Image 1: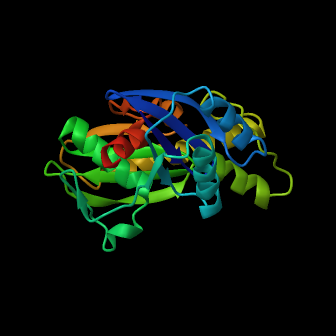
Image 2: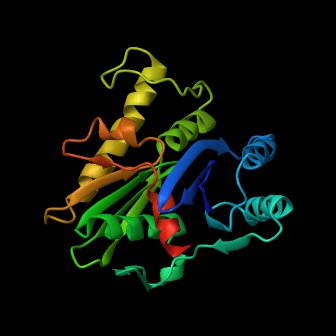
Length: 240
């Protein structure tokens, strides 16, 4: 059995893979004080894994803390940390410096190509919204990065004295009170970003969304969408 961990900008998503079957578990907000205790409690109920594979865009101390916890529970566990490379599993990176591509984006590219073998837009709707295009030959053409919905809201409330942060959802329409207006404005900004970026590649391509806000954003896009919440973990399984 392998434990697969995707450490994003705010959440730790993880799962166990055994006999090519992936079982995922509730994500943890690792910036909360009790997250390591929660993770330890969940891990203690698992059968001993052979391997721990990590994808991380977080600070190094978060990664080292997770490795230390795993080694305390299972002294013989093998640990691997994924890195972006120039080429792997039929995918060629479009970055001038391939190692600078976010490892989560790279793993999404690998998983998409492995599963679909066709041109695709991959949109990760997390703390940041990232869009990457892979063509029908497995070549990554590049991508764009923008703030995610929560980050956009926090930017407004942090830099504007009379606005308060709200995680509440509202109908996406012209609003008659401020929280709803912010919700709609940030949602429309994300949808507009995605639809404008898709115009950069006129050839037909599937649209694949992942990340915590994927369902919300997908509901407002004007074309068919496939949602895969485990895309990073699937890519991590490949390289592990």
